Length: 73
Image 1 (cartoon, one colour):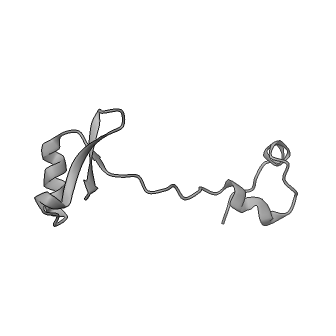
Image 2 (tube, helix red, strand yellow):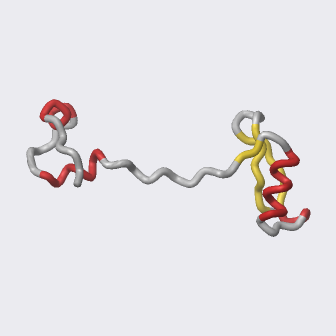
């Protein structure tokens, strides 16, 4: 059961008094983000655990060069 929304919140978001607006406040599904790693060794270990061959992926810098992600070729 969803919590009751306070009247101030309803006024703030210009919602009606009916119960059809509860989906407005529920968590939205976030898009899938790529898995990132701190070291190249960890990224290579993850790729081999997933069954990828050395020629099937490349390591690309992600998040402003601080981390590394595995990208399929």
